[in-house]
Image 1: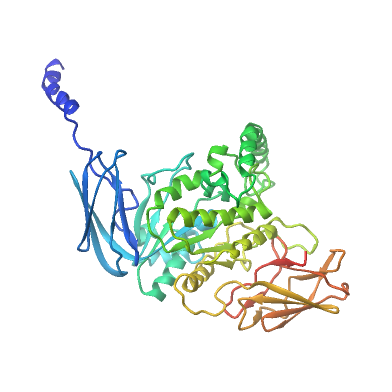
Image 2: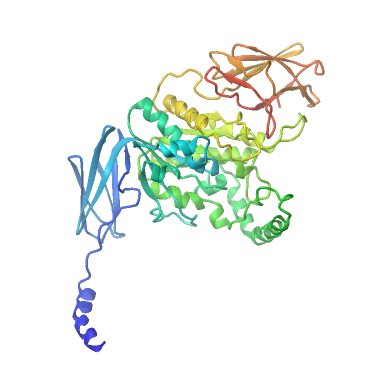
Length: 508
């Protein structure tokens, strides 16, 4: 051992006096099989020793940078046109990195909770899609890893880019795949999907912690977060009791889903943003697909918001993403919550899901947004409808209009526009039904009318172009109207593009 130390000592002293240069490294987002957004400058970034010179080259274009005090560096390459030609990125400093099998095309972020994270192998028709997966023009960046209490500079080491092939296809977001396949076919360019879905997450977790401070869109939230910190211990203890009760219940009587877990305020506000979005913001993207809201319906999560607060948070989320990405008109396309549970004949019953859907619609006040409804799902006994194909393709049609300026009539779900009262009838007019409304069944269902007393009764409905004329023999002077106002409504109204009409209430 002594002899070995004598041999190593000169090398140890040399490394202390003359430290070796740190190898240049890239974020995991810049790796083999990646896809670059076409039509905009491509940022290349990474880390190395302080003061080290770094040069990059791609498709005949070059750039260079020198690392700052923190060891980080960044440079830009010219915008490129999408296509199936494979490219190679070379990054050189004291060492050389080659990133291979790169495509240029349209890059979308797929974010939200479990319905966005739902993998293709578990979707309706998914096993067959996985078996036949062979489209290298569709790429996925699979993000994984725990939430964080502060912004992270890189994704967890299990995150990676993959091409759409049987080995990986089953673990890709089903909605993202059906969306990407549709775009790839229509635009005839490669499509990349950044797979960010994270089950059970609330919208608060997707908004960076800093955005809750002094934000006019989120008044009073600093106080709410402070209060949550004070009540966390008690809330955690309450959750532990509920979970113990759930766990001890006999299998036949146990609720299918356990109580929503309680996490610390440090992770509850921004925890997912910090680990899933922060490492992404240097990357140019085409837009965001969003499917989230079920967790904000749950009453037993102590810091969750609903109703108007949920609407404000969704708006704040979009504004924050646009600011962080530096894209003022970043397209934001989202899914309105699907039907959940059993149908109920009680038209005056409160509905948490209906209120959440209403709050989601507030997002449409922002430009470059679009909503598709999932209210027509068939498997309502689960929070995870397995038929993801129509949702992915509905989002793709919205993207073709919002992002790519295609002309597609009735490209998103019809939404309430206005109402007109005439004697004993009430007429509702809808947007995004320019070619008229379609009833799947004998007559429209799901409408209810109320007078000044706000007691609702089922209404008779007659379609007239983009409008529905409503009457009810129990409401002589209608003042209020609802459509599909329930957790699991009985509805059957669509536009000509087979987009279901979004639930709403009006007059209140």
